[in-house]
Image 1: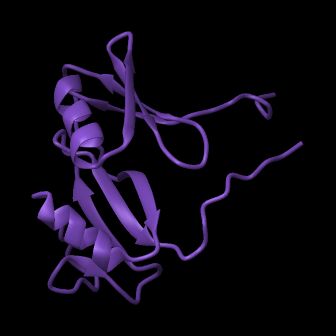
Image 2: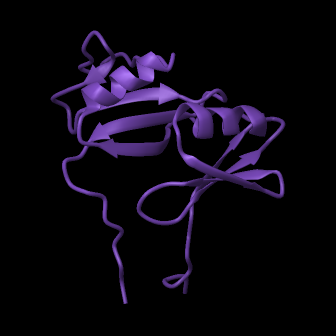
Length: 132
């Protein structure tokens, strides 16, 4: 029924201006705004919708993953921008908050609304799957 629908994901924030400054200014993503909502234009396909919600509760899971060839370099860039990595008990985290040896190398961080994001190791270029 929905096989040909150009689906996209989205998540909420309480402050669109703060989200625009973070995603566009700090992370350097291409961000557009329309009807009071943001679209994050990420490599590989459909944009991600960021919408305002006055009673926003941060997601308790990772809402957006950024595959990178070098997690250490990405974490260095995040720290240089003033963004700290998140720490989770029970995970094999190094001193910088990078998990190694339990799946892909990954580090988590949060946006100003408290939503969880990640950088995770991926040597391969991200190529969207195309189905007929």
